[in-house]
Length: 633
Ligand SMILES: O=C([O-])CC(=O)C(=O)O
Ligand SMILES: [Mg+2]
Image (cartoon, rainbow, N blue to C red; front, side, top):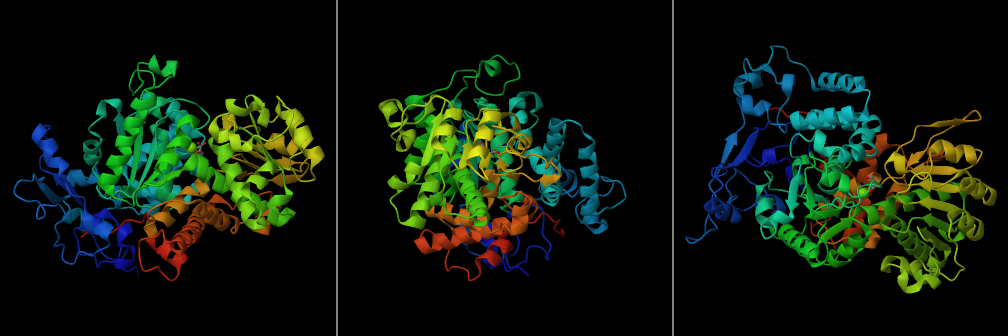
C-alpha cells in the first residue's frame, strides 16, 4: 500500500479534495473539478480576480490535508484590498463526467458508479473491463493503414479517455511509440493545421506580450510540475514549422507520463509563437499560427524572458522547463542564460547527449576499450552534435583525469562547410569553437572519415542519406566493429537506414538511430537496431528531478542518467546488436534513471525534498502514475 505522504507531490489532483490519507489505488475517490465561478465572463475585473488566484499550495509544500481544511484558493490570505477569485469545487457527474477525459471510464463504469454519478441511461447497459477497452481500441488502431490516421485516433483517445490512452501506450509501447512520437509526430506537425481539433496545450504568441502570467492562469490545471516548450523553429530535422510545432511538446509530455510516470495533470505543453519563416505555412489557409515572419533579437528575448519569469512566478522554483526543438542560434543562449536561475533542461542538447553517451558506454562494455581509446567524428555541429561531443569529453576527462580541453582533441565535427578546424576561426559560431582543432581544411565527410579515421561516426545533421555507401564502407575498412549512429529525426532525415548500415559494413557495424528501424536480416543473421533517442532519458531524468525537488540541472546529473541507462544493457541485448535495452522495459529503466539522478542531486545538495528516501528505486516506482481506473464513490 502506498503511503500518501511519500508520494503526495506526485498524487492525482482528484484526491486533493478528499482526505489525503487515502491510498491511491485501493481507496475510492470523488471525480471533481475546481471551477472558477467567474470563468464565463471575460471582463477586466475577471482578469484581476484571476491574477490573485493561488495554486493548490499544499502539494508543493508537501503537507497533507487532513479533512480538507486549508486555504487552498487563497481567500484567507487575502486582505480586504485584495481581489479573490470565487472558486467552487464541483463533483463531476452525469454527462459532464463522461466528457471529462481525466475521469471518464466509458463502458467500464460499474452499476453502482452509474447510480451514484447520474449515468443511468447515458451508457448502454453492458459493463466491460479496462483490459477489454484497451483490446478494442488497439484493434481499431491497427485497422488504419496510414500512420497519421493512427496518430489522430490516439490523440482522440487521449482527449476522450486518458487512462485507456496511457494503458494502451504503456502496454504496447514498442508498437505505439512510433505513432505518438517520432516519426509520425513529425508528419503530424507538418499537417497540424488540417488535423487540428482541440487545443492540447497553451499557445503563447506575440499577441500575449505583457499578459503571459494571465495566460498561464487560464490553463485548467494548477499543480504543474513539468513544462515542455518549443518555439517551433527546428522541429526534429524538419525545420521551421512555427506554431504547428505544438505536436512536439504534446508528444514529449505523453512520454513523460507513459514512460516516466509523471501524472498527466502535472504536464503542460506550451508553444511560443513568434511567427514563422516557413513560406508554405504562411501561405497555407489552415495554418494555425501568427502570419508573420519570426521576431528576433530584443523582441524575441523579451517575450521569452517574460515567459520564463511568469512560469517561475506562477509555479515556483521547482517547475521543470524542458526546451525542445529551438533553433541552434537560440537554444544554446537560452540554456546558458537560464540554467542558473531556473530548473531548465534542453532535451536536444542534454537529453540527446546523455542517451548517446549511455549507448557508447554500454557498447564499449562489450567490444572493449575505454572512451579515451576511441576517436569520434560527427556530421552535424548543432545542438545534438556539440552537446554529445561535450558530454563524451566530460565523461572521458572524469575517467582519465585528463583536462577536458585535451580530451576534446579526439573529437571531430563536420558541418555544412566541412571539417571544423582552427583556420575557420572567428567565422565559427561560438558553440563550435571548442571543436576547432589544427588540421588542413576538408570539405566533405568521406575525406574526413579517411583522414581522421574515427572509430565512432555520429550523424546529427538533420540531413537524410548523408552516410553514403562509400562512407560506411570506409568506416568498416578502418574498424573491425565500427559504431555508426544515424540520429537525425524523423526517419526521412536519418543519415542512413539500418539496412544500409548492416549491408554496407557486411554485418560489422554497431548501429543505432534516432527514429526506429525494424530488425534486418543479413546473410542469415538478424540484427536489431537500437533507438538512440532522448526518450530513454528525459522521462526518467525529469521524474528524478521532480521526486527529489531538485532546483537546478548540472552536467553531473546527465552523467548519472547515462550511467543508469548503460547499466541496463546486458550481453543478451548486445548479442542482438543492441546498445540500448528494449523500450518495453522503459518504466523500470526510468525508475533506475530517476533514482540515480535523484541520488546525485542529493549528493550535490540540489535536492530540496528532505529527508532523502532510503531506497530511491523503490521510491521512484512508488511515485509513478499508473493508468488503472480508480473506483469512484
Ligand atoms: O523528438 C525526437 O525524436 C528526438 C528529438 O528531440 C529531436 O529529434 O529533436
Ligand atoms: Mg527535440
